[in-house]
Image 1 (cartoon, rainbow over the protein chains, first blue to last red):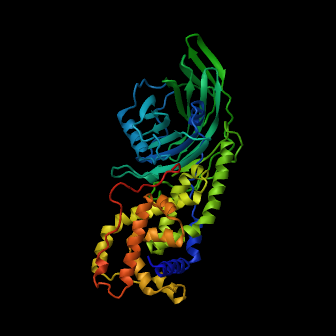
Image 2 (tube, each protein chain N blue to C red):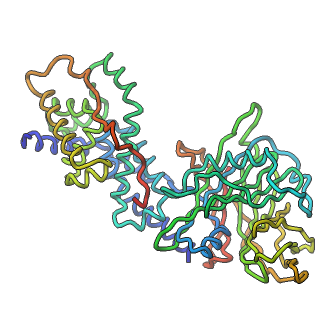
Image 3 (tube, chains in turn cyan, red):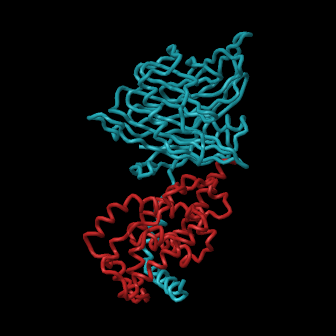
Length: 316
Length: 200
């Protein structure tokens, strides 16, 4: 090995490296690398309960077609469904499959097994599990929203989230841009009277308007959960496998819950405060080759608490 | 509080990018030998790191992880391009000076012999990556092996072959059609290149 050649090599590399124009690095520094998403997921609570050390969340939105009437067909009582409708399940599984792994070597690669299915008209909410990981999918005629949380072993608790926008999954005449925006703000979480953990999240679909998703875990003896909204309307939740889930059009919060068990029905307060402010969002840049879209949404000011801190999540 | 930690993480990442973007770009430029390609490579690397930043930031050396991501992406991309590049080489000159190289030369920034620069451009990407890590980054062979995901022995042999190749190309007895032989020294057995996980 020639020392002269090695010395020349070092010199040649240094010279070439010095030819990199400063504005090139400036361009790189100016890029916003953050997928602007923040959403505290109820799975964080679940993860903490199960001893998980790290949790990540990915939210995926797939817009499958043009808009239709805002959540038409919704009902306060869910339709019986032991398993997800095939179309909804296919869309949800496709969204889950297209998501990047949250952690290297994580077990969040599927298959995802549905554990609770809530059907109201043409809309289906499915809670999926894959080992310790949990995903919630909200599938409608024109969109699919998936929220995926993963856990990994580690020494400390860490959280992160990112937004993944899936492009149109096929079919001529479908326009993903026509209904592709959503915003979410978490209303808060609570545990009370047989409800181990519950989260209320407010979403806003560009074409369908606002909706509120409530999900959580319940004690094994609980056979039914009915949520009483701030406007007095009672919405029966779907309960299965220790989970309950319900949703409704609009942004009403939950004030109390009627919990059914073998001993009867108990009404428990579920005090949630409304979001600090209405979410606002900005346009998202198209997904990069890594499929992560960068969004220009604003973040609701932090309240400092982990149980009631609202956040904004925009994808479009 | 988790949210506070998250926000601190964002701030950390911005500081990280500010501190390492220049170094990563210079290294990428030497590996891919093309400024636009180097920018794309660094940008993609930082996107990937951003997604995993809450874990990466807890590492002892986040910059080392960034370098691993960058090199793995570069070599994976080089593999994809190899076939196309071979076709181009067969139909063109071994190395044509690009605009950025010409500008650097005009500014007197490139003092090395043109023969060496041309010979470096013709090395297989993995060979050049190994030389960059050894002679530009000045890393020991153990660290080079860790970054490239191979054994120290492979680093030694790749370095040796690359240097020998440079000598041949710069020497007086260089065959006229040597540039057609661009078979990269990829490890075809065992080592597969994957983006390193933050925990690795």
